[in-house]
Length: 190
Image (cartoon, rainbow, N blue to C red; front, side, top):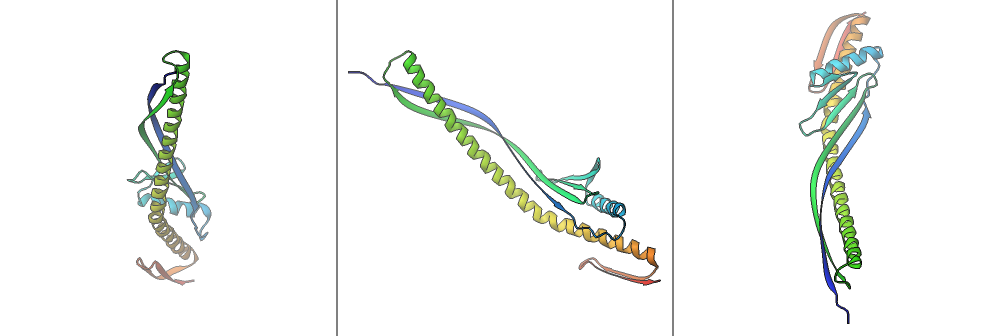
């Protein structure tokens, strides 16, 4: 009669989970003035809104870690967010061996160890998926607020371009602007 020996394996794994997401969009700027001048007006407006010039792009880091990057030459907006989280996972597995000690029991112990490590990897992958979803939800929520602000910036750039273009065409007799509605009325004498 053979005897069964209980084997118990405990493992601990440390993982650094990284997640990131980004989305890009294009600002719809009307070509009221030459492209370069429209880009200059966009830069001026975004600098007033807290963006910093980094190379050819304007960047702003939000309090929640979201980074907004605008390329004024192409009017492309990229919004990105990244995060990193360290987790320590522990797992345990038990099994039975027909050998009290020796190579057979070590093979069975190693098999259990591999199973525990696979379980820990699956747990880490599941946590990374949850982290990625949380990050994507955060980005989507931020985009709604950002879209409103960028629309306001584009409206201001358009209004400034219209004023400049009107001054080029003739003498401005009357100018009325309603900041609430965004309406602009320009009366010219040509």
